[in-house]
Image (cartoon, rainbow, N blue to C red):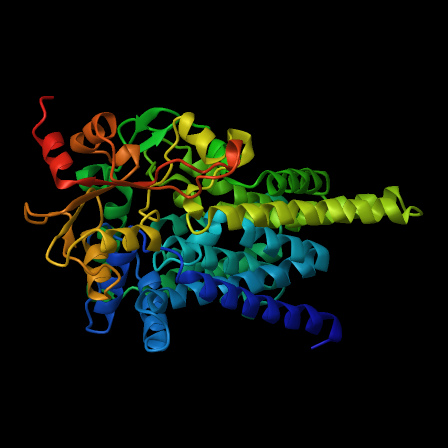
Length: 522
């Protein structure tokens, strides 16, 4: 390997290592979130040959479970149980970050590569999902790997096989991954690139074969299995349990009442730190100006836009904020890296003989990333509740009718400690709309050391609810309106304006208050 290629490769390995350490170090402070209990249970079944994927339940493909199971087996014994379950997805994300760094360096510059990965890690919601033992983090990681391997695939058929495997892994994380081939096909058609066409001819069949290989439920009944997989994933409205609502700008939406077409643009505008958003806008502008001579930028744009467009189509699942189109944020981070390099390049040309001006421009870019890092630190570990300054932070977003939380990540150590201190050992804790599988594991791991569940005997001491408007039951709405909670979880009670994160995420009510709500008229 030439020295020119070796330096980016070594730097990329270092970036992957840094990301792995950073994610592992921050995992234990991040509470268990909604889908993790179910994902961990399914992953544990893999070792017993129980593949609850692809043709079962809602039809999720199996790769995210394989990643969780493999990481759990490797890390068990030297990491806490939840961190061990998260180990595989975190390591996959670290590898993807390294691949992103390498590809951006080769296509643009080391400056753009540093900016891209820095932006990736400073997107609060992305940083949160990168930890979880669930499907959206692995989906994003595999999508990044598919994009990062496409350029060499165009030049070499062997790399086309590698790209096909990466794309097949993307298909195997979640049904959303089946949208991943679209930007590559459109790009090849738009540029009439025969080499890209050959890469697609090799890679697409490999991707389908990889999907089949990674999903054992298809092996016994291939034809019926494929039909079942697509039916489960394309007809969510047929399963009322999967018609999950969301609260968006003061109104309730679900599969029957689709979100407005601009929802993805709005969520992007209010959940990305403002500085990174500005750099990404510069990156988009730079890419559009150079699309004729720098086709790589157009492919980045296509990968960013495809989920924004698909998620805007009526009938797509509306719930959980940015989670349903999370991979788009990875490519927004790449655009921010391109934008940061463009700003510095413009300054170098504009002020070639003015060192102070160039230094000031570089300092401004560094300050943008530093400001984003401060947001990450200020919201920790409730990164899924992050909203930027354009909407007034979490307080402004809540006032505008957005959900302050949706995934139970407000149930952190401070809440659990309060419950332990204020609940006798023979008293139970009742939870509102929550994951019974999560609570089972938290009890098993002794994170929650009191009897707890969504349906416990009448002698329970506390009722715990999440402030997710789309998940409120009648009893929750009544309690919020008529009772004062015994405890509220807020990220911060200090600060001013948008930095005063005093919005309640989790509330605790007594058994007596719950009973009054339960039997109240209306």
